[in-house]
Amino acid sequence: MKKEVLISIAGLHYGLPGDEREDDPIEIITPASYYQKNGKHYIIYDEVAEGMPGAIRNTVKITGGTSFEISKSGAGNTRMVFEKDKINMTSYQTPFGEFLVGIHTKDLQMDIREDEIDVNIFYALDINNEPFSDSQIKVNVRGIG
Image (cartoon, rainbow, N blue to C red; front, side, top):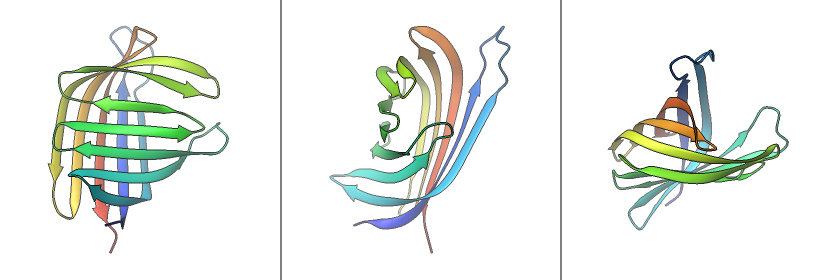
């Protein structure tokens, strides 16, 4: 059954030791559609990326308490899979070029309840086989009304 939800995604990329970059916090809160099928949870929302034409369609898929996946299509295309203690590689296509992204999920915590989902992910990010950052994503999904 589809229902209207709000999804909140807060992310932070920590620079690596010796890196001059500032920590880069990102947070979005946006309406989304939610449904459950074959024991998997799906959340679908659109995002407008600064400096990129058009919207990006995001589909989040949560499988049990073991896998969190974000698929992006539109102005940017990728499929990012987070599984605890695993490294997943993906191609990230943008209007500015394609990158090979490695995601090493160090910790994945999920709290799935009837009316709310909380996810907390700690991971290391590599871009084109070079360490890029340690990162964290916090996701909250809750019904509207």
